[in-house]
Image (cartoon, rainbow, N blue to C red; front, side, top):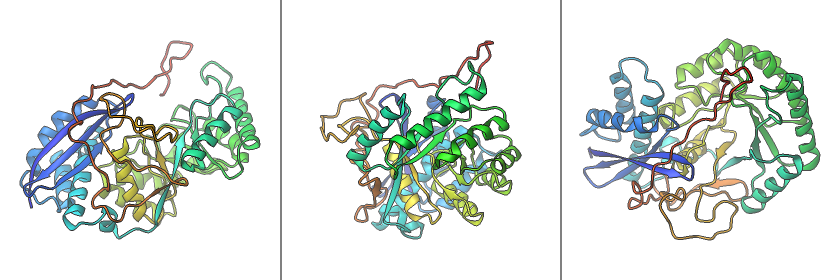
Amino acid sequence: MKIDRLRAFMSRDKDRPRVIVAIDTDDGLTGWGECYNHGPDKALFPLFDYLVGFIRGQDPRRIEYIVHYLMQQTRFPPGALGLAAISAIDQCLWDISAKALGVPVYMLLGGNARDRVRVYAGVYTAPDPAAAREEFDELNAAWGLTAFKLSPYRIDMHRNRWGEVVRTSAEYFRGLRETVRADYDIAFDAHAKIYEPVQAAQLGNALAPYDPLFFEEPIRPENVQAWGELKRALTCPLATGESLYSRFEFLQLLQARGCDIIQPDVCVVGGVLEMRKIAALAEAHFVSIAPHNPMGPLATAVNVHFCAAQPNFKILEYRLPHGKGYAFGTGAGETAQPGQGAWYVKDPYLPKDGYLELRPDRPGWGVELDEKLLGTEDYVHWERKVPIKPDGSSGYA
């Protein structure tokens, strides 16, 4: 079995662009992967044209060899774009390898350590506890979800006194706990918007009495020592890692005892192989893993297999695929139309009782891609909403 060609497609998931990759072998197997592409997404395509020249003719089952070879071809440690491209290639290789044996990918990772994968959903639009309860309950009724993630900010952090930002956040969470069901887990994502670690500690400790599932990425990732100091100052679980690239960066974070939960992204770090190495380092430090997963339904399928086999897995971020009536379980099943949603996966993993069920009878990632649709959907531009402070400078997005 040899790698014959690589095909890359630009698709979309409602308002987000998605770059999907297929690797075909000379004996008719196809493996699929998805890479992180939130800017600059169009720059990935020439990278794939370059990288495929190094792997054409190789046995796709030699995943460790191929990924290491591609890493070495970059000469210096690859950055965001290089690792995103390698991530998609790695995922394709795992898919092919499992399909060649007729087994799910998780069986190649040591078998499933669990029978299903718990997920949480982001809820960022609720203006008050009553609205949040309504949205939580709707997601629970449709999909059985009992875990949710919100933004902690209730007022503009750049146009209000910081003490007021902290106070309103704590009052909101207190109101949530008094309003929603007691069995709901609630996490908060601060989106690395806070510059000073002392302010991050103030906000986290104000939320702590109301039992957050975790307090996510309040500060920038670059200063690892600052994360160690922040964790020691907090009285709630601290999560981070979506902005880190490799096991070497995660090792520094873990050595600094900079978090309780790591959040690597399988579409960022170089793929499943690197995710496994990162997770093993975390396990040795008694740190659990809750993968970052804001991408499309193919990335979710990849994450399901990784999480199924990982002993220190905690919970998976989950974004309901748009289209086909998925939003709140209507089951409408409309006819697929280009440009409407994540139609490129025909049979996405959908929650049942708050979990994604494994598909032991389906080889590879366990999903079917719509090749006729891929590449026909219009490109959609996406960019971060960078805040502008009152003095005209930009804040962190």
